Each structure stands twice: as C-alpha cells, then as structure tokens.
Image 1 (cartoon, one colour):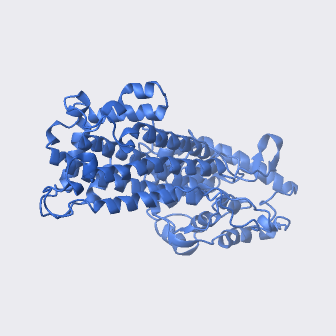
Image 2 (image 1 turned 60 degrees about the vertical axis):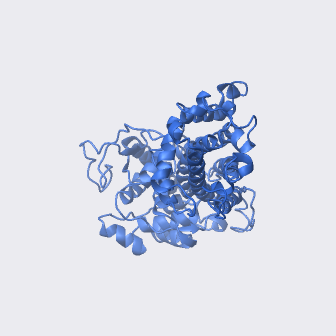
Amino acid sequence: MTSLLEPQEGTAALGEPQASLAGPGRGAASSAEPDEGVIVLGDRPLRPADVVAVARGRRVVLGRGAYEQMRASRAALEAVLARGDTVYGLNTGVGALKTEAILADRQAAFQPLLLRAHRVGHGQLAPAEFVRAAMVARAAGLAVGVAGVRPEVADAYCRALDTDVTPRVHLIGSIGQADLSQLAEIGLALIGHGADGEALIARGYTPIELGPREAGAVVNSNAFSVGIACLALERATRAVRALDVSAALSLEALTGNVDAVHPAVAGVRPYTGAHETIVRLRALLAGGALLSGARPPRSLQDPLAFKVVPQTHGAARQALAHCARAVEVELASSGDSPIMLVDEDRAISTGNHDIAPVAIALDYARLGLAQAVTIAGERVQKLLDSAFTGLATGLRADPAAPDDGLAIIANGAASLAGEARLLAQPVTLEQPTSAIAAGIEDRITMAPVAARRLHEMAGLALRLAAVELMCGAQAVDLRGHAGDLGEGTGRAYTATRRSVPFVGAGQAPDGDLDALEDWLTGNAVP
C-alpha cells in the first residue's frame, strides 16, 4: 500500500510572494519563473504532504486559474448583493442573528467586528506548525473558487505565510463545526489587527481590507482541524514505521519465530496493510541469521505481541490510509456556506462545514494506532521477563546481582502505552450542548480534538518505539547476536547504541532516548 503522505516533487508554480496576482490596485504578476518547489494553489488538489511542507516553511502562491475562478465567483456574488437578494452571511447576520440585516453602510464595520466576536479561544497557544497548516488549508479551500470572495483574500494567506510571523492562535475554542475561534485569530492578523497584525506589517505585509461576506469566509472552515490532521497523519505514519523497526529488533532479541512474517500469512488473508507490514519486516530482518534460519527460534509459539505484528500494524496502516484519503478530499474541497452557483446566478447555503467524514476517520486512525502501541508496550514487558527471554529479569548483565538493570523501564513503557490508549477514545460522539446560536447549531464533531489527539498519540508511539529499541539492543548484546542481525535491524541496533549504551553489571540505564527518538522521527530510519 503506497503511503498517501509521501512528499511529491516537481510542483510547478508561478508568481512572486508579494505580487502573485494581477488584480485591481495590484501590479501584474511577474513573468519570472518562481522558486523551484513553490506550491501553487489551484493548479492541482493540495495534498497532506503539501500542507506539512508549507507548515515547515515551503512557499505557496495563488495560481492564475484559481484567481480567475475566484474573480468570477466574486462578480456573481456582487451581482446578487446589488440585486438585493437575501443571502445568509452576505447581507444578514450569522447564527442566531441570521434574520438581522446588514445594511450597506455597515458592511465595512461588520467584517472586523465579526472576527473580533468570534475570537473566543482558550488554553495554550498552538504550535506555529499548526497555525501555518491551517492557513494554507484555508487558502486552498478559498482557491476552489465558490465562496464568493475576492482572490486577494486567499492571496493574503499566502503573503502572510511568506513572512516569519505566525499569528498566535489558541488550541481550544472550536467544536468542529467550522473552527471559528482559531480562524478568527488568524483573520485578525491578516487585516492588521493587534500585535500579530503589526508584526506582519513590520515584515512588509500589506493587510487585507475585507468586503461583504469575506469575514464570514475567513472563519467558516475547518482548516485548523484539517491542518493539524495533515501534521498528525505524517507523524503517525512515521510512528508506525518506527514501531516496525522496534518490533523487528524485538524479534531478534527474543529469537522469535519468523514464521509469523512468512509471505503466505498475507497471501491467505490478503489485507493490504498486513502484506505491506510483512514485506517491511522481512526487509528489516533480511540478511540476518534469524530470518535465514541459521538461528532457530527459541519457541514454537511466541506471545501474540510478537506474533501478530503484521495484522496489528497492518490495521493501523489501513486506518491511517483511510484518514489520509478523507483529508485529501477535504483539501480539494470547499466547506463554505453560502456558495456561489455562477451558472444559476444565485447563492445557496450548504452543510459542507460539517466535517464528520474527517472527524470519524481521525477517531478510526487513533483506534488503529492504539493497537500497534499496545503490543509494543507488551513486547517491552516480555523482553524484561526471564520467563519469555531466558535472560535475567530486567535484562541484567549479572543474573546474580540485586541491581534492577532495565526492569523499571517497564513502568515508563506501560505509562506511555496507557496514555496513548486514553487518547484513542472516540470524540465524535460528544455532544456538550445543543443550545449554541439559539439552538440552530445543534451539531458538533470535535474534529480539532480528534486531530490534536492523533498528533499527541503519535508522539507517544515514537517514544515507546525508542524504549523498545533500548530493551531490544540490551537483549541482543546479552545473547551476543549483534554481529548477525538483519540489514535493517542491524542499522537500528547501531543507531540505538550511538546514544544508548549497554547497561553493564552495577550500572543503571543512562542513555539519551531523546536522540534515539529524533532518529526514529527522521528519514534515516530503515
């Protein structure tokens, strides 16, 4: 199963960072070729890997095709407004105030007031990566060209992303029925409001002045949830790969039965995730004495935490792939309401701000990852237990010594696995209130919580993989098998020993798990 999150190279782009459009009051777009690898909104659907790249500094501009589509949509909306049609959020209030008209002379004042009224965030500030991911996701949604806003609004996100200033956004405040609070905080910075707006201006950014409907379009999106979901999926994908590596080294450490990864296992039960996991585990073990049969297994039947790695990691892979597909659809879509039907010369309200497909998929992704995390925690416990390894309890170098060796590592591993499982609990069934907006907004998804929890859970999984590698390397050394490991497991053992030394008699664990976790998070993992 090919990962849906692999970065794609060769993206074409056009335009300059501060003048990527040609429109009223702006110069013509530069004809010079842009920087290599710039992402162009509208040229093709945005992918999760693109969002991750922009969150980490890659440039993005609005494409010519998207500009033209947005301009046509805006012209149609302005005709509707001039005709006097009543359109939700265009010439009426929003939510409970949907019956209150916005008079023409109040439109200019209404836009910033809407943003300020929706700025209701709480708690800690979101990491800059989360905010940048949300900004590019929102710009991509506007670039679809049905929201009825000017292309300059989408371009404002691109221009702000081209600075080193990231608006401060609070993590708590959205119920997953459009991330109103977080997007309002971003929107206020884009119009030059507050300290963040001033900081953008100081970097050469020109604030956007919002016209009718445009403040509503800024906040009426689940871009914060979707942006975090992209980052969480990338981290979770790395976590599953890291758990593959730690599981393979644990098989070496246990001298496990490699029949569990025989190709026939997936052949007679052809789940794509199990097949991919078996291929990967065999590649990690390739060239070693265990997979070749030169070293026979210690047991006819290993504990399930070793035996069912293909099935469990495969289930996690399939859950993450399902979630990635849902996010890809969302990135290529408009969640706006209203939307302009240019061919029909009218605007309609929609329910596309309901992000249930992504929120449910995020719940599923966490449930899938939880299975892989749980058995990783169990493998650590087994490696530290003499009944399963034949080695000293706690993988002590001196079986007769009273030292703990690595025994207490079990506590930390159980804590990591336990907290990860708690984060796996579904959030989409929560219903804290049905009275929002005078009872109109009686539906929530808690999508941002679902995305944040997957991101946090993946971090715990990466840490647990580092703990398992520490235990696996210790057992390998006690057996004297370091010289005949597989190609991938040998690299994992070497990486572990760079920062986590062997714990000898009379010693306590004193390695740098942070460095090992960084290795697992990077691109050098086999």
